[in-house]
Every structure is written in structure tokens, then in C-alpha cells.
Length: 240
Image (cartoon, rainbow, N blue to C red; front, top):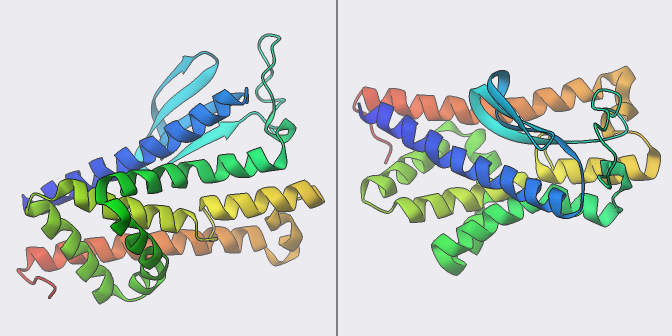
């Protein structure tokens, strides 16, 4: 029962962060009259969808991640503008606004961390860059971090735990690895200057596939660490 409760708590907290992330990007894009075609919570096949003001809102079946899809040069044929108006394609925004959109989500999450943990969030955020890689490749360290996180919740410090989680989530999003906001911002600059995505420069080397696999591998390592922690917990072994 404890493991199931921990899994539910972790899912709810991560869903809250993904929701804030999506909402921030959505509202800023709306403020700049950018057309949004799809807002998704989680990944994988769609289990529930509805359309509001021309935007498809989707709940997907794999509880991980979120996304906001804009109207772009690449998908404009798939999403023709249903009525005249001043809605813009992503490429029509200035480079500074495109980059601001990429970073708006993680900065909102970092702001949440400051709100919940005060200026201590700065140290959690800075350590998050190191923790993301060191713990991912060192399972005992990852299990210990996970144990401390759930122990804080068990002691009634849920908001502090959420603040720490938010700081580390923001640190990951600002780390230039595939799937992060920072990587997306770099890709925006490269596309603006060259007309091509980063992956287009290494098609013969399958660079796009390599970057995707590298990003997925980091997620898998962390997921493995979480499940390994729960396996230890089921056996009565608690990290020290």
C-alpha cells in the first residue's frame, strides 16, 4: 500500500508541474497571438480530447510529460486557419519571443520553487544540474534522493518537497539535453540562422535518432532508479 501511495503522490506532483508548465507556455503564446493547435498532458495515444477555440486539448495514456504544439510552416497544411484573424505562425514571432516561449515553462516552475522554499530554492536548483546526471548514472545515489523526497512527504512537508522537486525539474529543463526546454531553445536559434533543425545536420549519421535515444535513456535510468527504490522498499531495505 505504501508503494502505491508513493506512486500516486509522485504522479500527482509531477502532473501539477507539467500542468503549470503547459499553462504558462499556453498563456504566453496566447498573449502574443500565436496560434496553438494542440495541448497535451502526458504522451502516447489519446484517451480523451476536446476542442475549445480551435485548440485541441488532449489527455494521453502514458503518464509522463506534456507538450504545446504551435502553428508552424511545417504543419500549416495539416492545420489550415479556419477563419481570418491575426493569429500568427511560430516563425512570425521574433527570435527573442521564440526563445522566451521555450524558457517560459521552466522559469514558471522555478518561480513555484521560490514561492514554496524561499531562497533555498537557489541551492536546490544549482544542485539539480549535477543531481540529474550523477544520480541517473549512480543508482544508489538516485535511490537515496528518492528516499529523502518521500520521507519529507511522510513527515508532513509536502509543499517543501514539491518546491525541491520543482527546482530540480527546472534544472533539468534548462540543461541542454534532448527533450529539454534548453535544447529546444538551441534548436530554435539554429533553425532561425540556418533554416534547418539540429538533427538535419547529421542525417547520414542518424543524429536525430541518436539524440532521441540519448534523451530517452536518461528518463529510463531515472525510472529504473525509482522502481529499484520501490523494490528495495518491498523487501524492507531502506537506503541510508
